[in-house]
Image (tube, rainbow, N blue to C red; front, side, top):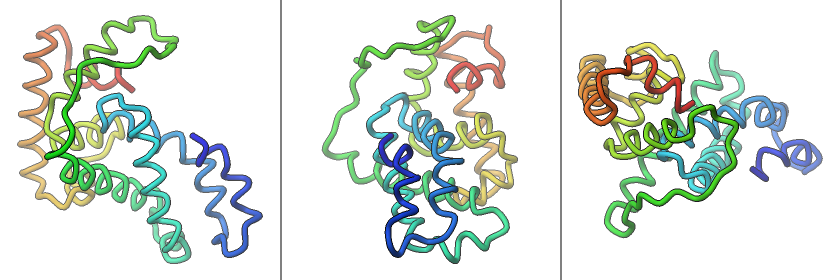
Length: 183
């Protein structure tokens, strides 16, 4: 989280685009939470993805900051960074079910870990669809645009991914409740 906490120091560096440090300070934590969900609970990878996405955005910030929704653009960059990372590492790294000890003020940490494991077992694209649709509360059309998929593909992926989540978690969870507990 150094890149997020160091946003104020960015403002003093020569060549820093206007308002970029303010953007990072205001949206960085949300981007980190989104990345955390995308990575299935890997905090270190989430930080790396946010840092890489912000680095890509930094270079083009003057143009991006003039868009109607710069936050939406940055989220698309984050999701694409995540998907690219998944493609690059798919042949070299193996997923583990061991999570590091993390202090959490969660009323039900076992449920949270179960949800993160179930989310982590989904394909990268299915996970991204669920995170954007339910945690980020985006519409089908917004999710489709962010992931460069058709609306039909987003609905299909959502339906299949939620069905897999329900199979893993049991019928007691509603679709909205599943990701609410993780976020």
